[in-house]
Length: 182
Image (cartoon, rainbow, N blue to C red; front, side, top):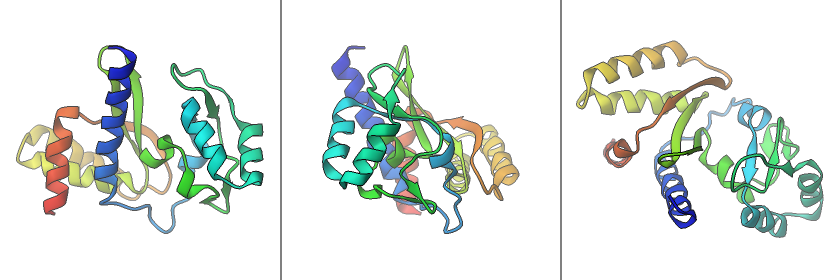
């Protein structure tokens, strides 16, 4: 897969995650563990665009906390608690990186497919798991039972969990249609 195809695949997966996420929101009592525990990678253009569109103090905080990323195609990263998280709120929410916009979905590099998609478990994503199970009910009863059991196990989760679910690309459009009819 060449660079252009990889970029198109990433953009396509980001678009699908946004189509799903518009049906959900973080609970009021979310402890922002996504901003405390995950690596946020920036592509060069994204990093530069964010720096241009945020206040000077936030830009200085970001510059002093970003490090060279080890992820192919990424330029900078923030590891650990995001320094732009103030009182559990993102200081640059309207200009946050794509990785943050996609969360709890994580788009990861995949040697064969270019990128893959997983869903990390957090207080919001258990609702996505519940709906994904309901969608699967008419498609595959075994997957429905597995996802429903997973939902029951984690429905009262109050922080992120390292457990994740791989989302199959070929299911995304049908799942989005299901959400839109719901």
